[in-house]
Image (tube, rainbow, N blue to C red; front, top):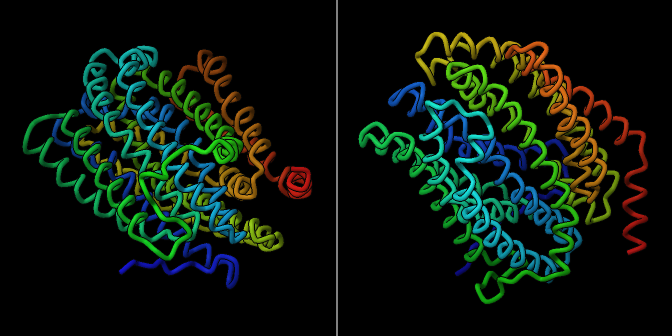
Length: 455
């Protein structure tokens, strides 16, 4: 007997309640997903040492570049599925689901090959310190073996979220994260495999989460798809729809990552202590970005389904409410992270120099988080409705390219960690202003509807 999914009533009812029903499972799911690398960092930092901690941390920007491109590309899948589901087109949803999963298989295989081939050279280009480059290369090459299950998981959970099921991805990640924690301790603290053990624990956990997700997609019967291996194929007309939304998102993600790689390269030039402090800050920093990203995914699903159902006023009202909710969450999170910065850092490292450097970085950036709210929420709402070009252009030119210019031309003049870090709030503020103007003063909805009528 088949299982059923109890659907969120995204198209009707109280908007704050529906947004929270979408947000909370996504947030906790993202929290457990990030536990993969965070537990790696925590255990490596405490049981192996500062050099190993820096080695794991130095890999993040490169992984984000390659993985972010394909995840951004596949994000087009969840948006077109949400729109088709909101419009009640069950046959189209079935075809979109199978095409999306086939695309994720191909993307995962390409990521594995590419990551294995260029990992060390990429670390060389990033000016990774000589005392950690061998360990960082080993970590990356093992990590990239898990790309196929990771892509299948990301696509599968995107499908579930598109139809309003945000709970199942959470359950699967809880299972996978518990596996990761146990294996991390076993492979690093008990069996002294160092960074290799941490990477191995991560890819096994990713495999577990992918198996759980695919099992549920196959098992569930009260959904407009019937998952079968024989139906996995990439249909050209669906791929065009995925790429129309996903390619700009992929390009944006890649440029974000390029700018972060340039920043990581700049940070690497300050030595192992600063690299380790920046790495730990990045793990703590995830607490906020998980929150903000979850709100972005929530409003994307909300806007996508309501746009598909032609409830345009509800899209706008939901976006305004999401902005207010995100602002409140940001203020509370920022206060907590600022006050608790030192004990949070000491969870990851007992080196007083690393802790001191990291707390300085944290105290500078945490108060500026509020400047990013409009970027995440408004771009999520616009993409949910199918408007991807302008959000991508704003992000590419104002966030990514301006940040690159800052690192290349200003940092050499004022070569400090604080100057590097200031590139973040500077670009966030300018991009937020442009998003607010475009969303509230531009005629984006009229243009999308006119384009649909033309097509």
